[in-house]
Length: 183
Image 1 (tube, helix red, strand yellow):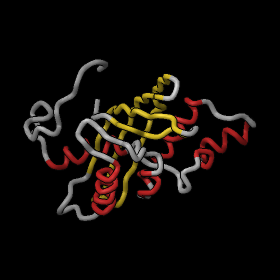
Image 2: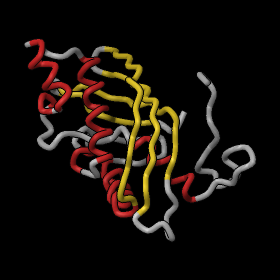
Image 3: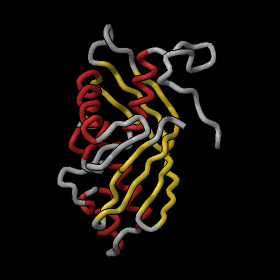
Image 4: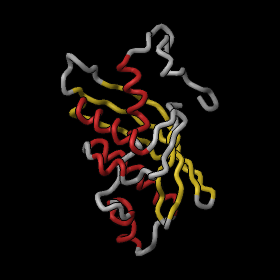
């Protein structure tokens, strides 16, 4: 629902009506925003497959909205391919979120997730993107399923939701500077 804040999944108390907040739920809540954090091998925006195809097909430079959508698509692919460099390629070195995580904290978390989960599958809906000159916000609707390496130690993840992602355009390239909690 628009405008409604969800439960505080960090609280460690009942996060959903009738359900206790478990480590698996906390992990899923944090993994969901990371669906949005992956990038290309070289970091060059035009080497993102979706952006490259647009340029080849039209001979035109993609719009800011198309570039942002391609960044987010590449992020999802990076998560599914378990390629940390793809995730971090679109994250600004100045990244900082409301929970105090920075670029290094995101990198450490991704390393942990990729060690604990062998298969990550993501389903996405085209994002809603709003742009104001060199700043943008995208709202992504997604579903994520992840299979643990060791089912005896880690629970599977199955989460659906929405997250907002803030981006800034620096030297012609859109970079993620913050993502929010599940909406």
